Image 1 (tube, rainbow over the protein chains, first blue to last red):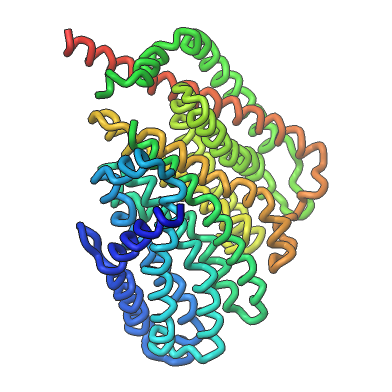
Image 2: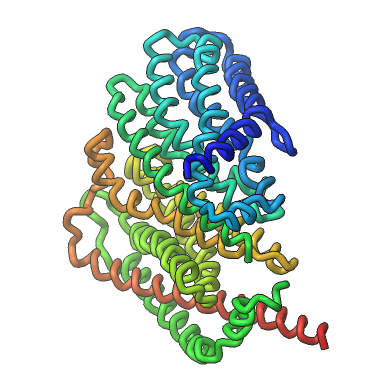
Length: 220
Length: 252
């Protein structure tokens, strides 16, 4: 099983990182994330105290918006090309394939955000302690964001209006991650990290099954 | 491709579900009529005859609309979730239609609940909106409804154009059901975290003078909800029937 999944994982990761076959690569959400962090000081003015008080929350909003960006390229091209049908003929279930894709998506989306967060923290005048909390929060929250992203991508893969719907469907589902992620930044809010991890785990547990049901539904 | 699929033949069989339509034909006006009488009676009772509350004063009367709307907003998504489960597991086409039909009335009740709650909160809490657990999770419910309605519309347009994919709507309906227990428990969970006790105001013990019009109002609003869902189901079925007849004529 692992021997059959490994090449698929490498392919998913290469496509998501590099961007090919009509997909933008990992750079697109990353640049978007940094662009939001850069725009915010223009909008509220460069007052360092205000920035450091609100900046960590802005990083979370930027991460959420960046998660919406790649939705229409996560699953749709492979459904369109019939790859999931080919995999199903070879006896690979959609659940397993989507688990692989969630991991690949997290590496191509979550890890770059973790690496870019210090840069955003510099733009938003965050101190070391705040940055550490943001990094912990993103580390625990981005797997959940990746799982929800893949689910929504699978739900909209068979629809012609899918790309436009992705954001509307994803936002209400990702709000708990934002609440606990940003909530953990308040003084004494470290407990939010545990709840954030819980939300991520729920999303990771539900996502492969919901997404697989959606992909199978596109066959009818 | 659609016509050859045996499942869709079944769908066309159900597109003329005589039994459901026979039931709905007399049940729908009955539910709507009884619901309107009960709801207006309970509202008149609540507005004219119930004395002002000791703490909330006259604003207590908003709750006779607010509380049934809140229950039905959640009942609407529960209907969607249960119907979606039936649709996915047993492939019952009426369940699919019931889920689609419950979305818009559910969203309307959810919006009414948020609006009336906001009007009530202005004099009582001194603010239109608080970001506390109950309000936030309920606002998320409204956005889930918006997403569901948009998704159902897109899936239906694709199905009309010859594609499949109506069952993805059911998957989203079941995923969104995660929010229902969160709304239900939010008062308990968030009290323990940060919320001052304002939201449990008057919840612990409701005087019978307030309780009876509230319960009768809830029953009336529920009947209206059921009647509207049945009416929408009949409309959706009529659409499917007209579509099928058109296709038959085109083939003949």
